[in-house]
Amino acid sequence: METVLLYNIAQTPLASGLKPILLKMKVRIRVISPEQYDQPLGVLAGLPGFQELDNVYEGDGFSEPMIVLCGFTDQRLDQFLRELRRKKLPPIPLKAILTPHNQNWDSITLYQELKSEHEAMHRQS
Image (cartoon, rainbow, N blue to C red; front, side):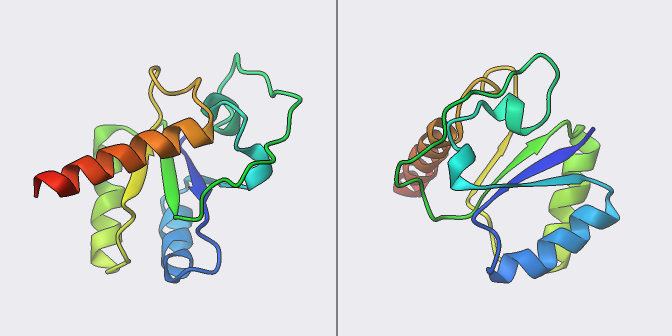
């Protein structure tokens, strides 16, 4: 099942435009709270074979909006990105696809990786 993990989206201009797109596409929405940042992404996405950890994240976390798309085909990903552009929503610099490579990562690890990649791309521009 297609699922989107949303981080720090509530109370942003993005929230009011993003959720209707996801609902129209019948994508499951999971709003991730900072207390869940230690959980593997596979747990947060509801993948089979992943078990929730007992610990609760108590660090500073991050405040930038981030989304993780889970279970999307290339066609559905293209459709989602087209809808974002069509609705003229603000860009989401920190976005990722859940993969076998990153499904065991926690949210902080993914955030740091995306932030590093984003900064590297902007240095090259």
